[in-house]
Length: 95
Figure 1 (cartoon, rainbow, N blue to C red):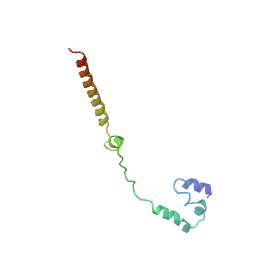
Figure 2: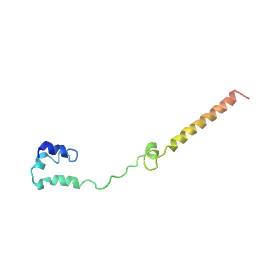
Figure 3: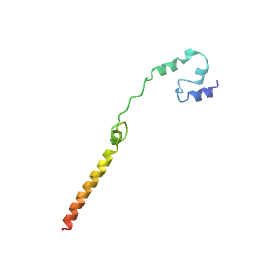
Figure 4: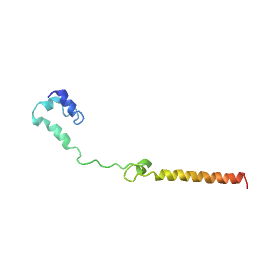
């Protein structure tokens, strides 16, 4: 195999300092021990889920995603603004 082919195939998998083309094309299996040692130290199994904080992580990501808090916030602001306008109108324009 050509060195460029090996480098292209293993470019995304193996770090370049560990698997050089001369190491992989030499044919001896004993020279692959640094590569085996590197991959044996990597964690096995699925990655741990990261629980981020913040509003987006709490309400819009995950299995309990909902836009209800945003809708209730908009309705609350509308109600608050309407109540203030109603009171100002009756204060300035007595009926």
